Image (cartoon, rainbow, N blue to C red; front, side, top):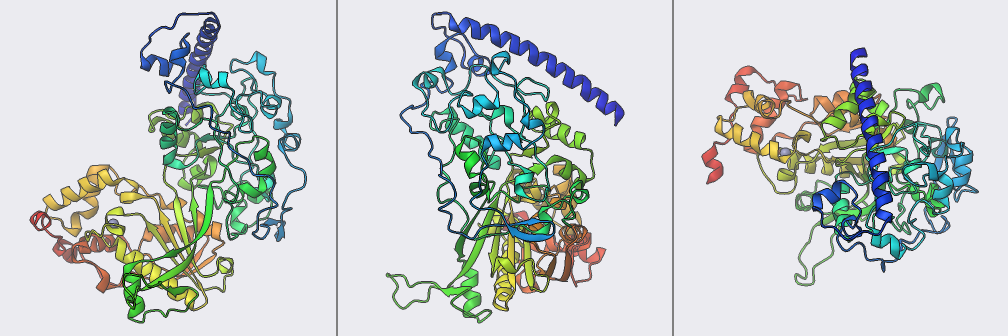
Length: 597
Ligand SMILES: [Zn+2]
């Protein structure tokens, strides 16, 4: 590890020297750009990589942005939030946070936080212009969200002329808002700020970008001039219609025992449990220009699935008018039964990784995690290496969606019957009905059990993780399908086929999965609708107890997916079925020809 750190140090030094050269060069170019110069035609590639002394090439989007677009409005205070004030967990008791908060604001935040309270260096001396907080507050750090974008700014191009390749902890003006992950209140924890708009860059305390993989599409919209780079969402009326209040798992090691408990064994490390309360908690700071955004959003909806209609008609669960309601008649088909709909609460969660916690959970060094994330995303986030002081990373991956049937407030009561299906996405089966695996039937079974549990007075929870093809992706998944079908698809070779293509048989890293259960306050699962030993082991290891485990009922298993199920049972998946090497060898899937025809 020591040798690794030496090498890392040398690399960091080299990067720093390179960046210094780049800054010097950029400053020279900037000086040149102020002198009148004829428009020079440079390659678009050159323009994208390096600022040129020509106003035409600095417009990355060609025509720049439509400056007639009004700046994004900002919500005023929190008075209009109709939902109950969110409770805050402190010193072992649930108490409401002051909502709307008294005081607050960026200056108060600055004054209350250690190193952050030191006056930032004057922007004039930094190579990046005015990076000071004072400048940010005064709007001196670039086009702020509350000020109309000046016409001359728009003419200059989408971004400042100098490219900030990376930043360093000791750099003049750099002064990130401290984050205390697992702290006993959200105010003490601090806001998650990953914005690179000029006024927020120096105080940014997170690497990456919002919206997971969709950050890339956002970049395209900006590049095409359809979106201002400094656009911030209008958060009016976007707050949750129901409250998922803070639970012990949100704090430190989950015991809520204060400082010692906040040092390690974090229960939630892969997203921000406070992510849905941003509109409420940081309203004033947001209005003042702090680019702190929600990373969770909650809403209410109906689930309507054909199989559930059938189950309701079969009398599997009654139409109670509360959890299960009758679908309205269609005008075109008077008197025809349109089946049922299920009332749910749901939450979409974007990934926000607390790197020391993720490393601890995976049993690796934080430096190893950072290096791998940098190298194996094509060097996408240099600050993973140059900013060891920044501990939070918003990775460009999918998150998850939680569906709750029944009263979410009852989830943290250990006496509540909880039925839970943690489901990893499988578009081919879940949506398009492929019968090579059991994903959709198992998901429907989970939803049906969630409904029945809620009707018994419990709560049903379905968690849908964006982890397509065991988090290896669909391209890999279909290659494995081809390999299976061409190789006589046997259960004995099922995992080996994946391992031969992907190098690993699974990349879902279930150790991070239970975070969402702790977010919901679940301490005991009565009915776990999953056969996966990996999920079960992760849940147990995280301190949650499980009473019953349910395998997919035999009658729901499509014939062709027998290969998958038998291979999984042999590998340790929960089942009452006795699996032997002989059975495994005999379990064969459909041949290639059967699929073609
Ligand atoms: Zn599947």
